[in-house]
Length: 168
Image (cartoon, rainbow, N blue to C red):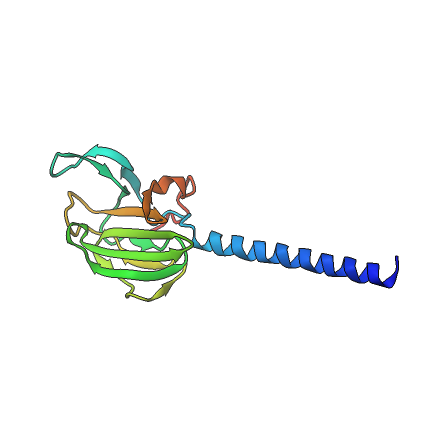
């Protein structure tokens, strides 16, 4: 190989390295923004999909999973992000909403206590609230929604099969 060929090969390898580095950076950003852990301890008492509302008895689509637990059970951010709502939201009661970037956002409703403020940055696993029974509810639970690109999606498609935070 002559000098020009060596320079060209070195330049091509450097470009390839930069492409791989950029791809890995993107994948890391996407992973940190993906809500992939259980938000709280408990069991799913109402799934995502059509159901009869427990109070109104009307058939409606439930855009969340409800996780039954004791009042005061910690609620954790399921991915890194920025708080966009931390306060009362009508029938949702005390609610936290987080924009995770990359098209993902989450809602955590019916909390007894909110531990974050709007515009605050949060990390995956950080305690953001305590579960409760505020708003239109029959018992203490967490109402957990995942949104992707402005549309609700089934949270069970994203969480791992077993809760990562099984302690209270």
